[in-house]
Image (tube, rainbow, N blue to C red):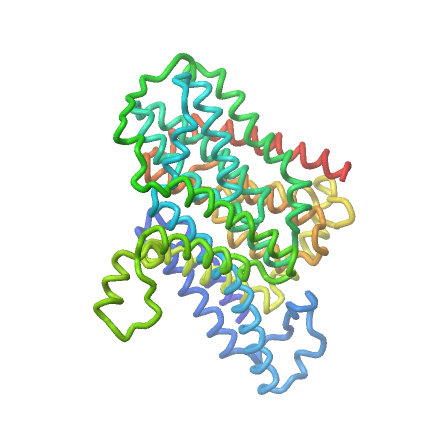
Length: 465
């Protein structure tokens, strides 16, 4: 039965990887393999010899001697446990996505366009790289890429130049997302899973992430394509934001998101609680600025319908990416099925026994640096979310162990090596119709150099801290 479940996961994973070839949204195989995996566990619960205790991160003793009712009850408790952990991530992401959409509702990101006051190709490269690095740490790398490429399309008319800028934005955005607990989904998973803390994440990964961003940008700035000046067409109409509150909502929204880690440190509550508070505060100002009435009751349906059409909160909620949320639900719960059967734990044990001889071991662990670097390379080919989800079930190192920080770096930045390797790359590919092989020839080598340089920097800085 375990073999069947592994095959279900493998085929589902393959369908997710071949999303563009199959023309099927990746949320579909994710949800299907999650449901089938847990159905098989439920039907064959008596056939499994062992069970993994997620709370204590160890195999449960005496599981084979449990009665059918005890095993079924344990399975239901485990399912509920994983659903609760997954829900924490999903609710957090829903709040962050809604705040970003509220900022966009007031055209807040147009304020960023004012930072570009030069026609030098090289300076514009550095401006967008630094903006991508900073923004992705606050609003996540996917959203930062969308915002900056949208601005890029208004400033740079030459599409060939935009492709180069977009490629470097992808590298910078993924690097910026790695050192922030709210900058990348995988880092957020490690943070909510109590594997990394905000302060240690910054100390361990900020400098390696800067190196990962700066080295490719520095090398690219000497390429012939970035010499000279751009022919920028300035339009007064485009420079005018749609709302007079655009700047206010931008800084309020970004400040509210940044406040979430601070709230967690102060209260010790899960991050999604702070995100809901931030969303509530931003929503209050959004409603006030939009001059819309608060609809506290749905008794008057006409008033409620009218409100929903003009309410920035309702509008923003209708624009968030629900397919992404459902994909995360499916993939995280499918990985949880493998974890519950002890498959991931046993695999990690075998890996730690064989791999250290192939590379330097991480301090105080039995895990090789090579294993984590290969995880980063793998994230360029397949989705990094299930890779990190699997690592949560494989390794039992304590919070803020350097292993978790290296995983955060590798999974977050390794995806830049292929355009399909990260959410930022995929969205840039769609917005600018970037060819896979063009990116492979022009950008991948820069991303690889940045990834290796950042990894070497991490290996050096971890000995200091």
